[in-house]
Length: 173
Image 1 (cartoon, rainbow, N blue to C red):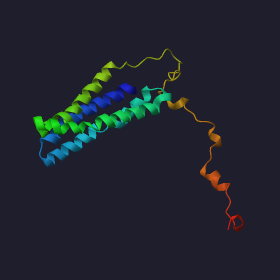
Image 2 (image 1 turned 90 degrees about the vertical axis):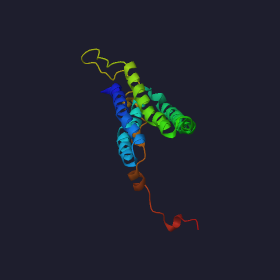
Image 3 (image 1 turned 90 degrees about the horizontal axis):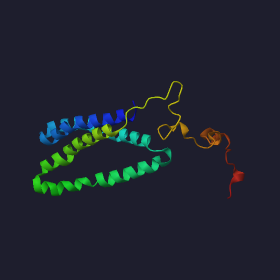
Image 4 (image 1 turned 180 degrees about the vertical axis):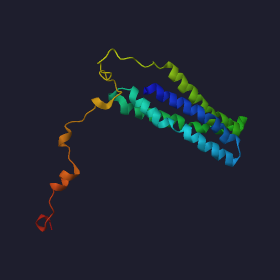
């Protein structure tokens, strides 16, 4: 399936979430809550899939740094966007500001995910029978990541079996 299918899932989920996000702003409270629940089912699945894509496309040496930088920018830019609701609501109205900044951005994100899907390369074919597609790993598979000698790591059972009960002779009093 691969990365392209994950991007497709992101695009389709955002497309399905956009109309119900508009419905959560348009309808009365009961209808808005129903639309909001449906919207969240589709819209909030992007987080895990996006991080799965992110860690697959970057090399192993910079994975944690890349995730940290991505979270930093996502939280600082995306977390501060609600500040725009107040000035926009003063000029066009509160409900219309939510149309643009809430539901509209779901639509924009689906367009951006579809655009990303179009820019991605298609699946590559194997060079021949008997070739290992994982031969040249560039961060897609964690098979190449190993720690030092894992046989010498301490375990809970080894710590318990090697310890002895303290006696009165061990006391410093």
